[in-house]
Image (cartoon, rainbow, N blue to C red; front, side, top):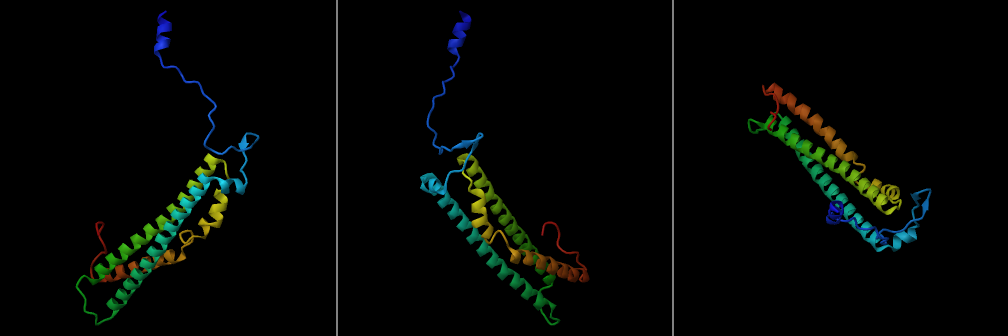
Length: 191
């Protein structure tokens, strides 16, 4: 009797009912879902909303990358102009001119590396989002979207950013040589 009372007091597991799923039903071949046709995907309101949102986020990412790249092109040009001015023998600048230029180059370099990281993370994000989407829905959209949309984006191939990074490295080496001639050792860790 005690066992019966204990069993009655314990919560009973609810029986599983066949509730229709919100996800699209797919045909299965050997236990694996088979991707449905484009017509089925195109008619699903959930899929339409998902890809509209995905395209909106894609546009935001490409717009941000383009604006940041343009800003860095201008900043790099200003740094190079400053370098040319300081190389002139009659330039009257502040005592710490080379260390100020070194700080400016270093900040630009750091920001360029952050932009490169943004590009890599954004690419990986789209790939992972689509991988999860395909896993949940059973559709096969990742390869097509990556090939037709994401791989053509400005954050996928960015030779200008890579060139600016290498030019900053060369400029910094040149400024460091000037600092050594003046008896300074370059930037400290906290600069």
